[in-house]
Length: 193
DNA sequence: CTCTCGATGCACT
DNA sequence: GTGCATCGAGAGA
Image (cartoon, rainbow, N blue to C red; front, side, top):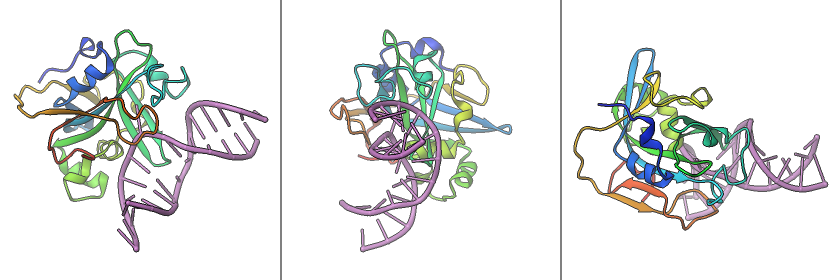
């Protein structure tokens, strides 16, 4: 499995969001590997996207979205949860892909422990859930995802005939009609239909 | 400084 | 389906 290189992320953000479906998130903790297949993503833009953190310009929080592509943008939300994004864009000044759901591939027992849940569906079927399962937090903000450190993204060599569907984004109140959400059709780890 | 509210998850009816 | 915990970022005064 080859690691995804920077040029993979140097495309319009919504295209990268679609391309990331089926790819593998790898997390290393204390020498143990956790892996999950990306099932659901959303693209967030810049001044073309009122729902994006970057919409009103550069701030301390959204700094990663304006920074180097192929790095992580992790933010804290609702006083409880972290959300994991990957910085990706071409000509825009800012842009990132929110990872909304994974299918657990490896390290499932560890994820169950972190999530305090035994049901495999409930481990990573939502952005806050997968961040908890993989123990992602502010420490991973700005992290280069093209290097094999403790978090990176790999290609998926296995052929997949699953259909990718494109829909409106979830959990936002602005730009609600933009079809910038992608997920594997009929997959049980998708956060919502 | 104060106020609002959110790219959520979970318990509950 | 509805309600809400919980806290930091961002906006405005």
